[in-house]
Amino acid sequence: MNAMTQETGLRTLSYSEAIREAMALAMDRDPTVILMGEDIGVYGGAFQVTLDLIDRYGPDRVMDTPISELGGAGVAVGAALTGLKPIFEFQFSDFATLAMEQIVNQAAKLRYMLGGEASVPVVFRMPAGSGTGAAAQHSQSLEAWFGHVPGLKVIQPSTPEDAKGMLLAALDDPDPVMIFEHKLLYKMKGPVPAGHYLTPIGKAAIRREGRDLTIVAGAIMVHRALEAAERMAQDGIDAEVIDLRSIRPIDHATILASVRKTGKLMIVYEGVKSFGVGAEISAAVAESDAFDYLDAPILRLGGAEAPIPYNPDLERAAVPQVDTIEAAARRMIRREV
Image (cartoon, rainbow, N blue to C red; front, side, top):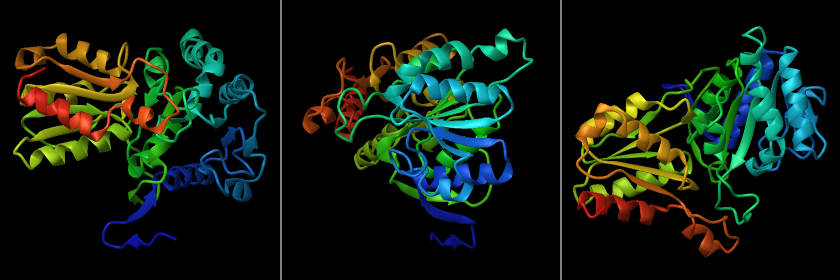
């Protein structure tokens, strides 16, 4: 058990423990919350996030689904339409490609097509990202795909505190919410408030304030950007690091305010560089008055234009790392970009 700090009400939990606590809290408070997914019951989930929940809530509320993402996601969408609040776990976010019909054509559009008379309060949990040696079909970062679809909300918690609070906020939302959980974060530990709380969807967080450069990042890249920023601080370079948290909607106001302050913008993301989150943020800045404050070109630091390799050295080379973030930021400061 993790001891609570009496002064603050915070405990140290891992990212996966925080998610599991959020699901348990929601199930205790609301009997309409159910869990669905492949191997989430007795096995405890592909990444052991659901662990003992089937023992606590039984197979009627923690349901193992057949190996059919299209079928399972479809049942979850139907359950949401009939008044339940399903949390559907994909074993890997890559497998959501098998359920695009249910997510993109059904869940995202039904509230609009029915004139607001019905809602689809389904939450899709999506283990995402590289770094586990799972190769090209199990290591993608596809959040930008779903961010393109009106009707979906797409979020990327980067801390245990946000993993809990944003899941609880997703369950309060009438629209379908896709939570991309980076697999390398599941074991990361951090302070988490006790009890029920909501972390707002659509609001970025400034993780480090700075004056020389704005770095916008999401998921695991937040932590790599922070490490790079601390290294640069030893040489007097003061980088501001913004944790995007939400892909759709994006908190443009926080980003634009930072760019006006620092005059430089780098966006770091694991998804393939082209047509990604960085392009959307770059365009938003270019279309705003913040563009006039830039004293260097915007830099997108994204994933390689290739499937994620299995070889561990190639896998690391395919996505931004601390060293590459630091090197790119130093080039911006020296105006070599």
